[in-house]
Amino acid sequence: MEYTFKSDAIIRRSVRTIFLVSAISLFTLQIVDYLNFGVDDVFISMRVAENAADGKGLVLNTGENVEGYSNPLWVLLLSAGALLGLGNTHSELRLLWFAKGMSLFFGIGVLAILFRIAANYERGKESVIPLRYLVLLVATSCGPFVLWCCGGLESLITAFFLSLSILLFQTIWERKSNGQPVPQAIFIVFSLVLALAALTRPEPLLHALSAIGFIMYTLRSSITKREARFVILPFIIVYSIFILWRYLTYEDLLPNTFYAKTGGGLKSYLMSMKYILGGVCMVGGPLILAVPFIQRTRSSVLLHYCMVLVGASFVFMLYSGGDWMAGYRFFIPIAPIFFLAISVGISGMVDSLYSNASRKTILGRSRFLLFVLFLSFSTAFAGRILIRGQIQTMSPGFSSHSGHSSPWNYEVGAWIHNHANKSGIIATGEVGLIGYLNPSMRIIDLFGLADKHIARNLKHAVSADAEYVLDQKPDYIVLPSGDAQSVVLSFSRPTLSYYSAIANDKNFRSNYHIEKRFISLDLFTQNK
Image (cartoon, rainbow, N blue to C red; front, side, top):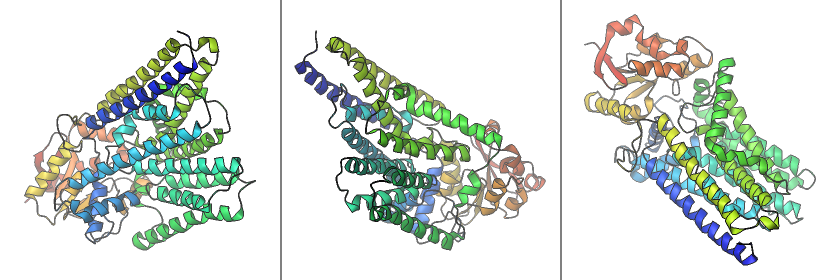
């Protein structure tokens, strides 16, 4: 059956409908499947948020001014939820569902922004595949992206602000290219969006500085001094106020998590490269092979802006050594860029294949569209297999609704809550859920996120100081048991592990005994 103008219109309408229905179906099915995803760090943010809502400050332990979180804007958002009555005192995990709902909200916001960016990108072009619907299909076929829409952490709000900056840059660039005036408000909003992004996580500061530098260089011949000030000053004002507040509150210019999480050395850089390569494959999937088919147009400057943001993320990943969490969390803020590049590449590939009028047949186009659909669904389900291999404790949302994938941490935290002195001390590396279920107990964080002494020991490769922990006479010490400890040590630096240092300390062995064994954790208490 030969190609005609009428059949082309039919194909376009059919493709839009098929892609939209497929994207909604993929997104919905995966959201339900990943409903119970939630790492321990979510509860760190929740405990800090509840302390802030109670007037105790943005701290993990009352009276200890340590910035033991790395997502200030997200914590403030959760604090608002706690103020609305969603805190631990009203319902054990209600704030968790609020956090997950906010992740989903910003995830849908990312999809909406991508739709708009793609619609602007293809404006005035006659493509076989409508780019704005294709990008939705590509995004929803990415398992890690949908997974973190259920995560309850800040990844999606960061992705939202970075995606919004791409849309604003696109608007500015198109108006400047066409000789049209750009409202000053757009420059101001662009700067403020980057400032807000920089308050969600550590690395968006690199994104913001790179983005501002890129727009100033790209528009160097057309941007006015007034417009340049509107790009730079709002960001500087907002972020300077934040840095001043941080220093006055915590007496440090960097968050405590910087010292606890960043290492260095050849091994760290090799692990970073492994993480980066794995993330590209996991987030992009086989569809990443379409990127080389991107066609050079006037809109290519937009993709150059996107690549600058990707480069900033890679610099951060290289320095930080990657991340232990499932679903390549560090890639989620820049995942929308992958989706956009892949979609533009697929669109270019299809246009190249069918540029010859003699090959424009409904059958030929249908075959290729079916191939795209098949590959998208295959990517989604392959991602599901890999994700479930990483998180074997996550039950499907079809069968239960715990909201998290840390059943053993929950058991330990609940046992302490039911049996412990509410003003006691817990020493553990699993401070999230255990600490959240025991809000009035002080937490000694063996990973150093909320402890300056331990964090700086880790940063400077100083051997683990077991005496520092034991001298504080914790009522409970939670350590990994058996094979679980060897797994933890394989992801960290064994010589610096507080787990092994405490377990092998003679004072610990003489003054503590196992109170209760759980599947992967041992709970120790002081001898009477």
